[in-house]
Length: 324
Image (cartoon, rainbow, N blue to C red; front, side):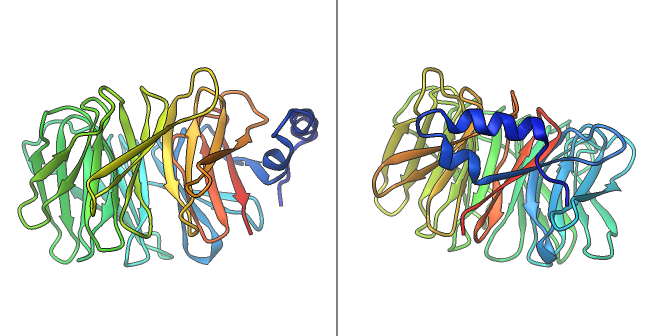
C-alpha cells in the first residue's frame, strides 16, 4: 500500500504543532495517484468492494482506486470525454455526468461496460455537472449551462428542461424520502424538483448572492448547502421552511463541497484555508482537517460509514479521513 511520503510526514508534524491541528492532520491518509499521466481528478464516489471511483476530467476516464493496494485503474469513456460528477447507482454501476460528451455515462461494475445516454438531439452544450438518483430509480442531473434533466434507466429515455433563471445549476442531491434538490451557483438559490413534471420550485436563501455550490441531504431530509461566495455552510429544513447559516472559520473562507456523514455531521471543503471541516450541528462547532499539500483543491466529498473520501484535484492525490 502506498503511504504518505517522508515530505508529507514532516509537513504533518509541523501542522501538529499548530493549535487545533494535531488531531485533524493525524486522521488523514493520502495516496498520490499512480497513473501514467495526470488525470484531473474531480469527483469521487464509493465503489463496491471497498474501492473508490473518481472522475478523471482531464484524461477522459473513470478511475477506480483500491486503497488496499494503492493501485489505480483508468477506464476510457470515449473521444472528447471530460467527466465531472460520479455517483453509485441503485444498480451498482457508476453513473457519470460527462460534460465533454454532453451525455450521462453508465459504467457497469464489475464488467466495466460503458453505455452513453446522450442528451436529446439539438440540446446545446450543457456543461454537465452532477447527478443523483430519486426514490424511483431515475437519475437527475444538472448542467451549468442552464439545464435540469433526467435519465430513466428502465427505458433509456433522456429528458431535459431549461432551468429557472438560466445559467448556474451545479450541485444536486436526493433525500431519504427520494426527493431531489439542486442548487444554482450563478443564481444563488436552491430548488426542489417536481419529479412528475420535471419543473423546479425555487427556495430563496436568506443570504443574497451567496453562491450555492453543492448540496447534500441529512437523514432528516434537511438540505445542507456550501456557499462559495459567502463562505458559509447553511441548512434548509423543508419541513419548517427555516434556514440557518454558519460562517466558516478563518479570514477568507471559500466553501466548495459539502457532504453529510452517517452521524449527520456535514463536511465542507474550504479553498480559503486549504482544509476540510467537519461541523457538529449540536455544538455548532467546526473541526479543521488541514492538508499537508498546498492548494489541494477538494471540489467534492463523498464516503461511506467511517470513511470520508477527498479528491485533491490540485495535487493529483486521493485522501481519506477515517472516523471509526
